[in-house]
Image 1 (tube, rainbow, N blue to C red):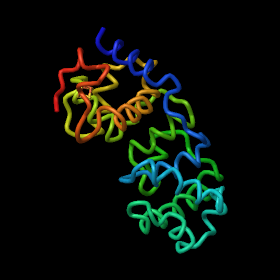
Image 2: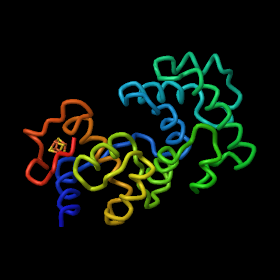
Image 3: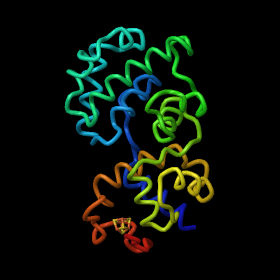
Length: 203
Ligand code: SF4
């Protein structure tokens, strides 16, 4: 079957999947907020710098906006994100006893948290069967003809219908790696792609 062949080729290409150094729910949540509209090469070191100074919701909630801004300045929308990180940390302390919630409904109540961020926390940190759809997953799923959608939320719904459940939580990691190196947003390397013979190349 096409979809199973596709997953098997991606797994073969990236046997370790997408390696997250830290799968702690709070770390995952804050790093995913920082990653919004920012490249991984910027997000990963910024998250590391931030957590070297403030590694718990308590410490983050007590930090000043200036302190946080100075650690994440190279991240897109860093001023907004600095305030959000403080707000999120305060809410987690006040409403969830310092523990990041493990349900979509509760995560969506946090400022700046949409379905993609919530699904990254649920999938990577809490190991739930969810599909985190970022720009890579949305673009590649459409190019491969798995879905025909115009936004990531719709892609998530459609992928749930076509992807076998065993692949839900790993597809994000596999497609992020694939999208960074081969099926790039601009200039996809179709001529050297392992999907070349089965991909309709809907670009
Ligand atoms: S053949 Fe081209 S469009 Fe299709 S998955 Fe590969 S790089 Fe992407």
